[in-house]
Length: 180
Image (cartoon, rainbow, N blue to C red; front, side):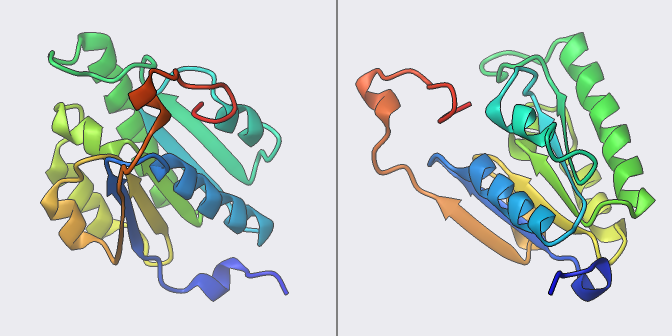
């Protein structure tokens, strides 16, 4: 039997964080499971703006699975966000608020939200307010390294990915279809 929107009832907040690989992949796995059960899902990817395997796959699941990117395809490290990055994040945040308020999606993922918060693209208070004001049945998934403590506290489920060993450490670059 398919799970229907009425069976969700209570939407929880999930966090996938840590320095290990697999946070976005875990969120996508949850979305894939949900689509299989007839749910509508939406993923907002902050900072990302490049062609990835998940974006290509999502195109096959429209309208049940939507992935939108709000970035230039690079992380912001050791510098302030530029005006274009700030504008993309703001536009993304406005869209996310509309998506959540619409009631059209059962699960909404804020991918790399921790990084967006850390570099000042999004204020942590904005995220907390959204968590509190969202319609009850909307499940939210937040991903990214170094999730702010206030967001961890607000979550119902927190999973930490721990880096034990990674091919990057041996100089192996990101591989198409595996890391992106």
